[in-house]
Image (cartoon, rainbow, N blue to C red; front, side, top):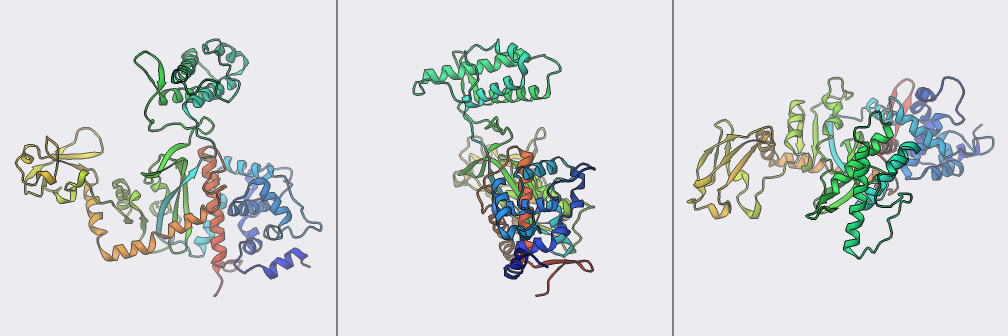
Length: 522
């Protein structure tokens, strides 16, 4: 006999509801045996792992905290229906929110931390929903901590070092401090913040405390791992924001370090820019999506200052690896905006025999001068011909830099009638030749084809809709719930898994013992 909750939800919920999908296929997706390696061989968990996994999926879909998720499980009939626990008469009433914390940590430390995502993706593959095309994009993930200013960073790093040093070592370290600051409280010292001299004195004294601590630890062997990590963080913080003035005073440099640590609470978060005019602090979430089924096939999280092109290889492993998991037939293709039009990406795709549908920016020149594509670059003859017909040989570049060669027109520009529209340089126009010049030129030519443009416009925007699905809740969506790169990446991957399961429910995916995963007939 069905209990009232199961009977009510079964009769009233839509057929493609995520709650109904999980109720029907929870044991197939998340059997308790799937989590055996996470627990001891003896004893028994008070909450079945399949129930916890179901709650974690619904929690990420609805952007809830751990306490809110447990409340939903306790009082929401749909959640109880999805988890297969039925009503409240003799069923499980609820559990402590720390069970979710424990399960996430066990998954993170396991050899297969992304198993929930992998199970959902495997179901989509078995049903034939994953093809050989991918669309790539990224989105900012705001960090879960406050961005610190320079003085807060320095004091926090010193406090962290003194905390992990232990009583014996901490006493010796405190003896070298000269500012009189006990570093007991997290707040800033009380000074007249409107007085520039007082601010400079504060920065100088705390910075000298930091350098005194580093000098005291210099050459000390066999430091405990936490002390070593805290020492390296302090050295990084001191080196990134400070400079020595003419009078020998340490002061804040009028610049931003390229890889600046922005918080000692989350040292891996970084300043990032999604566009030239839109900055953020935290991480970037990267996804690969099958454009036909809109199933997410891979995720990655990087510090906010990482370029979009860097994680491409990991996002399309199933297309490039000989042991890949994409059995679908057809030509592989990768779509992306201009952030993925770098020469390195084109080289990677070309090597793997993947069609590059990534947009490549047209060349540009400052002040509206002639762009690079106005010059005839002949790589076979190793020459460059300018719009006025002057031909210059390409000289190989020195070292292993970004450029493979360069053509300098020099004196030829002084008598050229087109010089005002070409360059204002006294040494004449120079054209740099990149290592992937031929691929970039071919890609720019290819994307002028109307068929290419129509395919691109019809396919690439689908990833924007998928990112909107991921980011619709601020908590755990746009704003990261975790601190640290690994935990943020695991949480983002779980969000993608939950979004994929919701998509499979919408597509009316079902499973039978005889046929496996298939789509229900329309």
